[in-house]
Image (tube, rainbow over all chains, first blue to last red; front, side, top):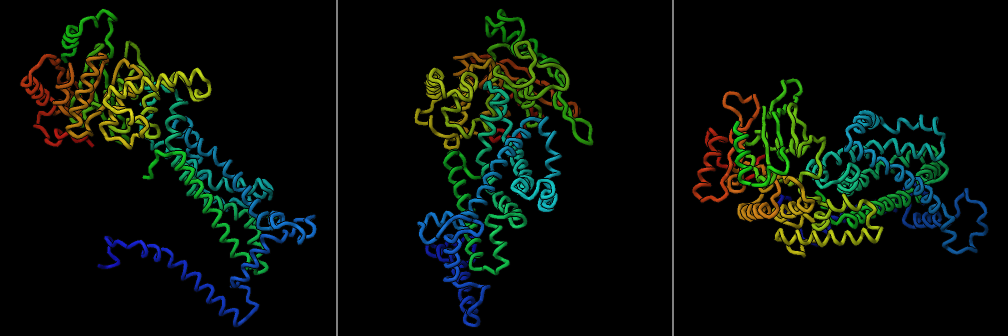
Length: 285
Length: 299
């Protein structure tokens, strides 16, 4: 029985082993190369060892961020207080705040898409303009945004909104249009008003798919957020990564990258669970 | 067209209809439907169709795929507007579908995000309670009444109360259509429009549904417009069969009424077969495509 057949049926242990294999290879290879480099040069900063990264994480989590004044003597405070004044928490807080502001600003995009799909006048009014905006490379707008909105929070949030909103609007629009006409007609024959058909029939039906579409766009949101933070910011996870690059601080950069991946995974997982909880009738097609 | 003669016949069959109002329930007056096509001449679907349907009639519309059966139904529904002529329901023209017509399509007939019970009460909820209705106690009580009424309909349709909390995707096709009929009937529409409602069902289920709709019609005397491509179904259900078709050699003219047949209600099996043959001859003059008889839905 060949392993490479379409009808091959790997067993449970095989599936587990195979799915983790590349992780094991990658991690082993990294630490092997890392140890080799440290034998040649004990001061190597490019590929830190596990111990160095551990120290990096502890420093990032517990040592006060350099801009944080007035903490007092670090050794006399509890671990929790030190963590809350550490740069890891401060960066996460700053990035998280921008992330949630952007998500809140993106929510109206769903409603715009819904109304575009339901009401012909709204559709013709917005569609061409949104299609045009969708084609603009948002990052190329970055200088314009910094000039127009200054280099504070507004510019960064605007970058995310301009980069992601057209996609979300068009997604919501297409999802609205793909609701079978029968459902809308049925709503009217049961006495529903335009408002009820839009919100109680169509919006309720597309909501799980809209949430999935937002989940797919999480990476784009993070991409624009990081671009903004790296170029013009004084805090945030991406600001820290860009800053540490100048010091070749790989012992902190690598844990930061993994931390960002973990956070994004958790947000995605949370949205998926929420979706399943809110919409038990929904089956992924 | 012999529409006028049949209308008189129907009035005799259903005494007491004519006195209520002089105008027919549905008046289709010299209707033309054309679809504009980009770059080409517009395509004519229906050509000067005139038809009066009285209160309490059970009318089947038959015809080959693509001859405008569903278009005619959408005109009555006011989902579509005629290019020429008028469609009046209870004497008035309408701009969009409303409560006067209940609608049971072949597919997507239920709201997938609502349970069976919520599907049936949707119409009552949306017209009487509104979106924040759960907040006031009197309205909550009213909703309880709706649910009790819906359960009654559910039982009448032959479903169990245990099905009430299921979602549509957990039901078979036949059960879904039963719920869809209940959902429409609970609003007591003047007209029930069914668009190939049983065409996707297997033969056994289909026969059960036909009995059900026939019984419901006998009880309620709701005017029913039933679109089907199956002549046998049309004849065995309806009190009147309208066949749509195109005249040979004039295919571009669009379809018109080629047969308007009133069906005697006390009938024998051989009479039904005879009537089916007449319908088949008018709608399928080139012989019958066997696949269309097998109950498979037209694509």
